[in-house]
Image (tube, rainbow, N blue to C red; front, top):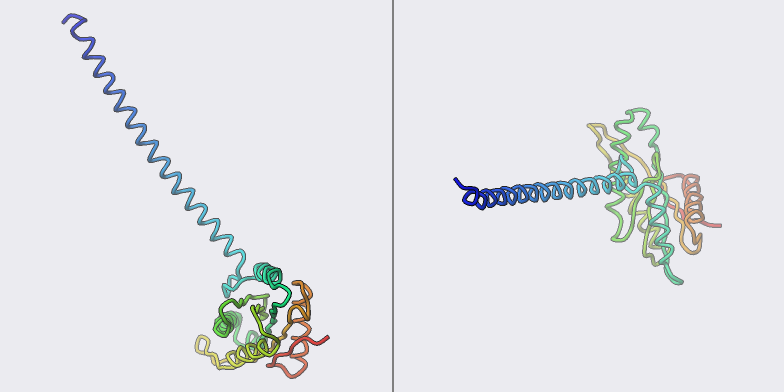
Length: 216
């Protein structure tokens, strides 16, 4: 066959093969981009989840001290001239005795149950956190005044006084609460939490299983 008869056909076939190869490569590139996007999304979701876990108490899943203090700082910043809020420090009475008698597993179950009961007593906008050990923090925002804070504290104490049954073991505890009000007892995180702790000490001295508002 003469060259003039075969060259155009060979060129057409070559161009078609090239187009197919380009289309194949384009498809593979699109697939790789999609997979890369999926992997990036998964990695970002994992990083966000890990960041969230690092800011929560792993036992109760309540905000840990760092996250609680961040939220408290934000609440104090937006409080304004006339706004009020309160911080409560909660400490379990007789927790050590239960932990020593029944073991840490039961103690951990008790802390989880207490966290749930505390959350069940709060209003929309309030925040509970775990300070560590058998101590919890609560942010009450907004607030009318000390009487409202005491009312919520008494509700929490009543809930904690209800009997617990943990892995078949009946348990009973008390709960002591110290209350600090902003701005009266502090306009910054450290002062407010410290004064709530001082009020907690007074509650313990007063016989436990009660709430006290800070007094200078």
